[in-house]
Length: 270
Image (cartoon, rainbow, N blue to C red; front, side, top):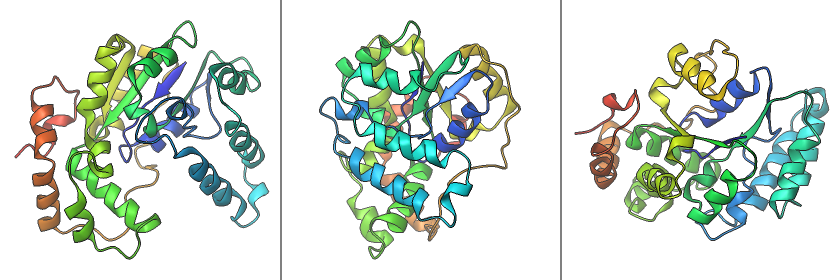
């Protein structure tokens, strides 16, 4: 079992599509199942129902929705996810779709702040559970997150207002606080079962070959030109990016003391 923990706006949708293309890998029809964050207290515990409704509408409001492959299975999956209240039902969700697959999994960025006991519970679901965690230059990730907020949730709020809200404990900050997730995985004894990668190195043959080898899956050449859901909306100015970098300085200071994977060397350290 492969469980992705995020981070949001760091290439998780691209990685979902890449993993789904690998022979033997059964990815959930829905990228973000958001199941385990419902089992225990965390910042994203109440996110599931609203996200499921959004995904259902996204499918059904397309022109000719059932002309698209997998639309029916995606709708069935969204309905099933609303009834997953324990690990037995979670495993049954995958079991009904198994057809010679050797690997199963999903990627839900909301899992980035799961409690220790929940992480350990997930780690015991099958004989071999692996975790994936993607990181991106914190300021660049946060900028994409802010564009996402203005596109979907806070359309009329100026960028400068959203920048002023970025502080410890706030949503944009939490999603960029990779040290929290890395520490939780270490404290849960799961560091050896975790593959940490960066958005900046994600689309390279070497990165994906290493991931496939680590998981025991055949390698497929990645398609870096097929980046999914890039940050859309009004771009931040250089001055706004600089302000965002300054606001996230404690996160950069924490990351500077860590052994980070390839790609992080180009982050905005200063």
